[in-house]
Length: 309
Image 1: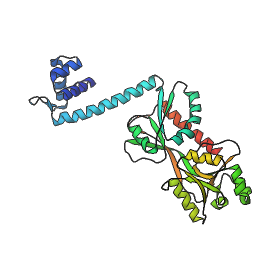
Image 2: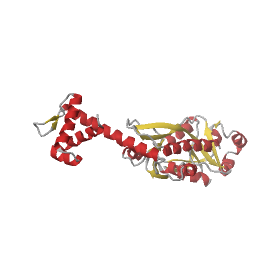
Image 3: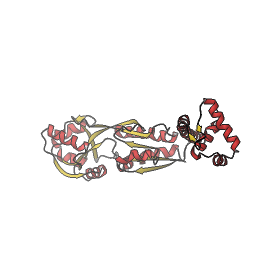
Image 4: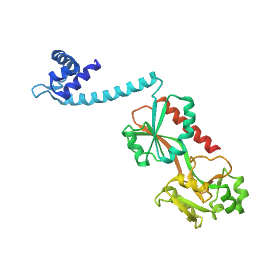
């Protein structure tokens, strides 16, 4: 069948008026009626009740539903082919929380820009609860999120294991962990017991229901430690800044922006099993552009390198 016949059928199904539908498609009424009759002969069904103002029959209702799906498929195919023809879209819209946008996007963008100088990156920052709705509303092409979603309309893929680490400044480490300093520094890439840091002041997540905070409190309780909590905040970047100001140690995920120099240390802690996975999420049934896929690849590569450093 000619795909145009399905488009003519859909217009007639919507207008329920042969004269008006024929005017919209630029055909005579006879020519339009002939195309509808050809569809009916092909499927051996009646699509319209012509005695009831062209109301759809059950067969017509089902064909109309498939026509809508066909149109959606056609639009997606057309978009993808155009992207391929012109070397991909000229903009990618990425959803991220403020923390992820601050810590991850700039170093990745620098590398991405060298490879894709004509593609503009637009970061749509929002709260975690808005990331999926923004994809469904087509405000973003994909997003970075920690927890997977059960929404069947969304496809997710894990790209990075984001474990919790204890962040502490060099000055605070030497002031509070002198008894274990040599062992701590010689085992920086291995898991260490929290008791080595028991005398440190701590900056913790301020939300009592936050998973990171709950894991940390449970860790202290299991080891019989009453922590000296000097500061709380819900924003991870605020906690990181307090670490850099020598205020206290903080538990942050490993993808938190790496800081060069000798002023900051990061340690894995024994019995702190909180492991999150950084995921990408995008709309089920759509394909990511080559530029988007490359941005995601670079994110994985750069985060792995930062953690290795």
